[in-house]
Length: 86
Image 1: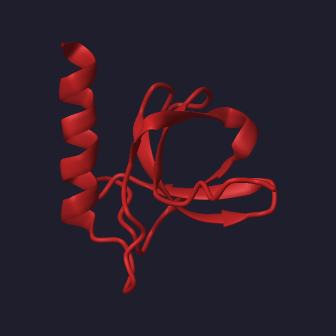
Image 2: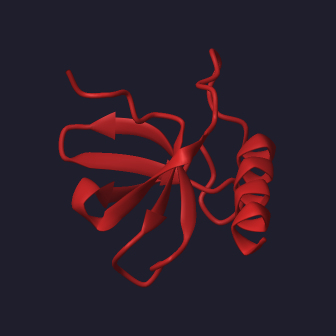
């Protein structure tokens, strides 16, 4: 049984956005759709191959009933980045 990765944070391992942190908002076969609430909003997610991201297991955003909120995504990502610096 594969775990549900929607709502998890993920760091990009490849591409021009290498090392960027995103929230996974949708999963579709071998691709995931990620957003950061700033450059990539929930209504314009970036499609990435699952092989090109590193899941961040210790931080997760609860999956909302009515879609992901850009402000909430920005807050969760900023909080994670601040914790990582410590």
